[in-house]
Length: 115
Length: 118
Image (cartoon, rainbow over all chains, first blue to last red; front, side, top):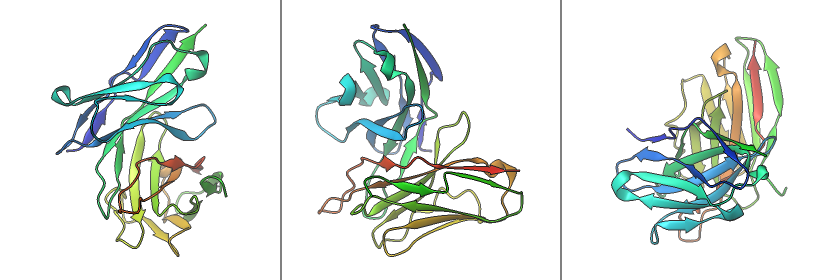
């Protein structure tokens, strides 16, 4: 079965500290991988995506993620967290064809940032 | 418009009534998604439309749920005989299909329609 697991429902970090959000997936083939962020009162926004090539991808707002095929993981990282990063983060996976672009989302990780 | 527009933003209905939720995607985006987000849950895929292809309905939870997309643009999600467990935020998203037919993978989401079934 296809699924996405985000083991951490809630994470609290201090402003300026580093951050890593975990994502593991189960999929028949290597899927495309995504991280989306949902800020309070705002819609979801794409942070970054991996289709192929370099397994370390850079995204917006200083985020990066690393695809590890052997671990079926796509963890999101940021070296120094800002208070404005407090939000809910979703990992998503999928494959695209001529008749489907279905993305499967994880349950999300809520990030709280302490001053 | 500039973004994905959904209406109504809030809908309160009584159990057993039918509801319609509307989504107006970004102009030029031929891919359209419906997701459901329940409290404390992730996004649950409902249905996907891409151009003139048959929609991927694999996520619809029951035959009370249906969706259509008219003229390749506006989409309507219909829930018949609503139940309390249908209460959730229904999110619509659209994305662009490249000339070669592949999805860019960047979904643009609307603000959602919050449905409350009493």
